[in-house]
Length: 397
Image (cartoon, helix red, strand yellow):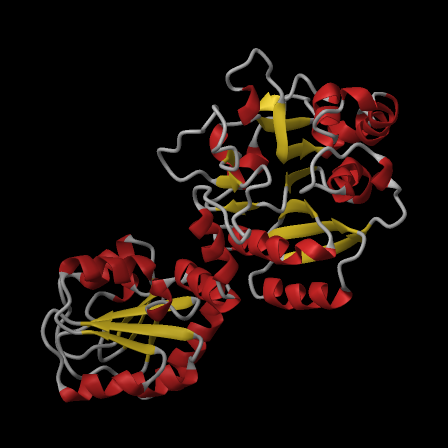
């Protein structure tokens, strides 16, 4: 099983639509994610439904209940923010990972975030993007809507304990609530590129953020949310795109992305090659029937006649009529065996070439085109069973 990167959200039941939209946007561009949802009231049914959708994308979701934490008493100067935002304080204590990406629920992800999990954290507790409100000031506070957390270091430095103490004893300094507390605790954070937290909710202010290319993470900060009935912020339509995105569409996208088109040519673990200039290939029906685990690739430089073309109905026989030299070389390279079992003459010194490339060579006594020293096995043309056994024994080597 592939290892999963961990993404954490904090939300309540009133925000499940926004949370679902954010998760869908993540899954539209990222696979193998383990989601942790910090909450105190989201229903079990929602988690069961999400688990079904995410399992089809090789993702998981974990319900992390934080009931009775008494965060309602902490500073809240903004109507669109509630006590749930303080749940992120608890991440090192309730999420058993070494590194997580925390995301606010008013975001959408438009690209691959895998590289964030590979960043050198330099012994720091977190990495974040400088807040848009500080761009034109001497301050360097970060916006806490996107946090790359080094949980090993957070636990070592008692991240949760210190944040709770700051919030309890320095409430007057917390203009931005928990974001201010996080900045007081982590002034030496690692700065991330703005593409990982592009705030588009501040469009009415002097610090309008320019966007030349679509950011990887779009953060609808401020009360101007895209789901509001009336809202003129940029990229509102993009949020609605992900909101309306069906889970089947996401699965279909990844099915196409992960499709290995070569599987239609290489469907079995063992490849056998035959290059022929004749329609007559000794005992090919018998061998292909008795060796279903082997794929028989039969090629010719010329068009093939009906005797060969009728072999196409066998699942493990693939025909390459009028093949060019590049195709011939590829088939030989990919093969484990070369069967010198075509009647008439050898084509293009193929037995010699197969020998030089270290392929296992088997032949019947009436189809061998080279000296006996070339072959790993020679059997009587009257005894195809012996050829079958030779090939089977070589599979076990």
